[in-house]
Length: 314
Image (tube, rainbow, N blue to C red; front, side):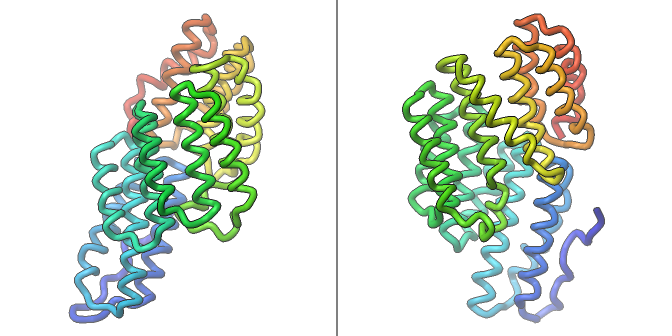
């Protein structure tokens, strides 16, 4: 994929116009697509170059309406920068970009989405209580059913990680209800990833957490939800499909089907070659541990070489 690192800077003393805002959003959309497909490590340089252009362009004059749109576009780009840093294993950089995104955001749903992403960082690093607090804070300003569906699903994940079956299932039910009332086709670009397939994926993640914290009987519904996600994700959502496949493999292993677990993990591993995502490595680790505990030799031998490859950490 080839494109310019940034839009052309307006000449000195000129004004920022809608053409610059549209170009910035188009560039952000293109980079977001690269992140989904190849991981945050694949596009962080281009994102940083575009942010450098924004820093310079912001000094130029603009009408009040254009300035507001430009601020929102910059907020979207900082949110993407934070997400790519998170995916590449750079938590400090992610936090800094998310805070900058909040200072530029002019849209309540965008503010909620940024706080959701901050919560996901906490959840990834083993802080479900901190993540839950961030998701609740995001819910205060969430302005759409679609955003509330995202937040409820992630709250369910937090409760599942904390072993609270009742709250997890209640929040998951609320997520499905909110999603049914949402207009997915009109979702904002930064939230469009959350479609019916992603809802199935996070449903599977919630059940997978309950398998570990509450009852291994949740492995069967986890497999059902994750299979729906895997078969629905398009190639441009390769990272999400990889995560779902790894979770699916782990649940097959929990159910005692080491052969199916190895086949499923093999499908995930086959598409990690071009992916620069530290989170992929993180999600391989529990599968590797469980394979060792259950003496699933084939599966363990599939995973072991990947855990030794530095490039996975981007």
